[in-house]
Amino acid sequence: MNIILLGPPGAGKGTQARRLVEERGMVQLSTGDMLREARTSGSEMGKKVAAVMDAGQLVTDEIVIGLIEEKILEGNSAGYIFDGFPRTLGQADALNALLERNGVKLDTVVEMQVDDSALVARISGRFTCGNCGEVYHDETKPTQADGVCDECGSTDLKRRADDNAESLKTRLMEYYKKTSALVGYYYARGELQSVDGLQGVEEVAADISKALA
Ligand code: ADP
Ligand code: ADP
Ligand code: ZN
Image 1: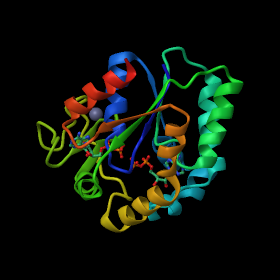
Image 2: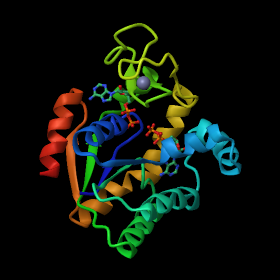
Image 3: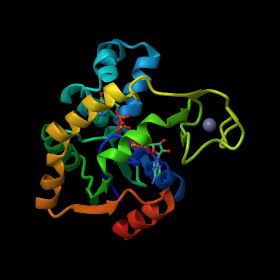
Image 4: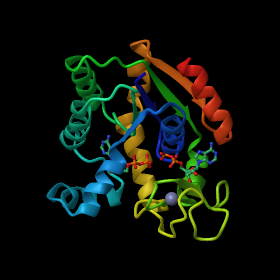
């Protein structure tokens, strides 16, 4: 099974993707995570995208399509979760072509619908474990022990440089200008299903499971 999780920044894509990885052994392909890894590793590409990411703008299609292509060519049988990709019509067309060339079928696109007003609260409270990637929130999902990851015990808990009100404004604008057209795009292809992302994590997960059934 291969799926796309579509939604604005903070909709809960990463949180739900991690659950699907755990429950179904699927492979999460998050272009955001890949780009952040490139920055940490200090690669030329990582240096090139840093300022654009911190400002909340989208990096070029060419870069993210290249990242996804590398992963598809590695092959995997349990299925992919595309998390945060595609984000433009150009990326969506490129993904179709890439999947077709490699004999991979896209099963469904799950749109996670969340009000803009809720996104600010979600983004501003978000922190993640630098070791295992677990996603937390100051109010809705704090760690059990202060400063220690529940999953792996690491104390390397981080906040993203772009998770601030100023960058979020740009990210939302980028979403509406460049990404939201994908809702219509996948609807017209008969591949879209929408879930209410404002519910609790468990309820959203249950609705996604229904969409995948
Ligand atoms: P969020 O979790 O808030 O949706 P991501 O971690 O997916 O954000 O992405 C962080 C940043 O990485 C984006 O603001 C953008 O700069 C860049 N990025 C990630 N995926 C893409 C993509 N598919 N196309 C262009 N830029 C991307
Ligand atoms: P995205 O990958 O779409 O940017 P995340 O999965 O990183 O979103 O979630 C953004 C923030 O919102 C995180 O701090 C996460 O813990 C929190 N969150 C995710 N899903 C929910 C939910 N259903 N209800 C409340 N908070 C949530
Ligand atoms: Zn951890």
